[in-house]
Structures are given as structure tokens and as C-alpha cells.
Image (cartoon, rainbow, N blue to C red; front, side, top):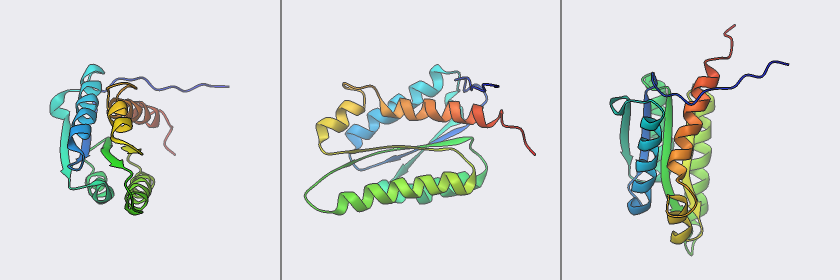
Length: 156
């Protein structure tokens, strides 16, 4: 059996980051983690474009347009949707997750779901680097690896 693995080098990659304005104190930490991970793995900051979305629900459309532009090897979507007292959370989190997944599947461009979906602000802060690692960095690393793995798949 052949085992195919990808490396974590971003030296020749061009990424877009989409981040939400909502919960910006949390999301800003995710963006910092994503940028740091990209550069620490050989990416150049000039090969990283950052787009600001009004909220998580709007992210899939922006991601779709960026993916269709052909300018990016991958897109990292970052945000924080925190549960409240209404069903709004379910619609926003579900819509963002489904839209991001569909964008990746329909365009063939890897798109990371780095949108935190938590019950509390404390949980979100922990996942933004205070306690449990930085999910923005993790999403970026997943995209670096995915792009490099996809490049190893033979074209028919």
C-alpha cells in the first residue's frame, strides 16, 4: 500500500482569510493565529489577503466569490458564533457551516471552517488561544496540508 502524506509548507501558496466583525475581540485572536501559522510554515505575508465579513452568515458567499476568482489556493473562514437565548444561533452556525462546506465541494478550492460555535464567551476565548490552542492556526494548518495533499493526487 502506498501512503501519501502532505507536508506543511506554505512557501508558494496564496491564501485568503475571511473573518467576521461580530465578536471581534475573539476573532482577532483567531486571525493572529492564522497569520502566524501561515508565516511560520514558509508562507509570505504578501500572499495572505484578509477580507472582513459583517457576520458568519455572510461568509459563505464571500468565500464562494473568492474561490471562483481562481486567485487562492485555499480560504480560511474565521468567526465566533456564541449561543444566546434564541434560535438565531442555530440558523447562523448551521448556515455558515453548510455554506462553507458547499463552497469547497462545488469549487474544488479547500475552504476551512474556522468559525467557533460555542455556548459561552469563555469557551470561545479558550479556543482562540487563551487555553486550548488557537483554532485559527489549526484551520490554516489544515488548509496548508490539504492543498499540498491535493497537489499529489494524479490528474486524469
